[in-house]
Image (cartoon, rainbow, N blue to C red; front, side, top):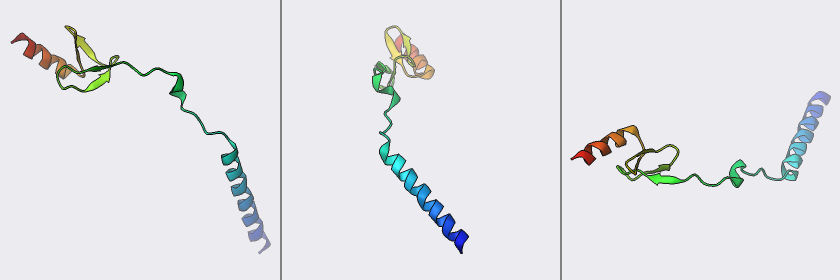
Length: 78
């Protein structure tokens, strides 16, 4: 019975230490607080906004995917 009490005491001390460390530490901040938001552009085909670095540009129009770029070419030729 003495070993069981020792294990319970160790578990209680470990839980108390963990809770104490959790409440003492300052909360973690997000890493991207200093970053500027990415410029967004609107797809000329579907209207979805995507980051400009991921968008495709043709004839001063932006597209969210290669498929919409192709559809824009087809509709622009008519």
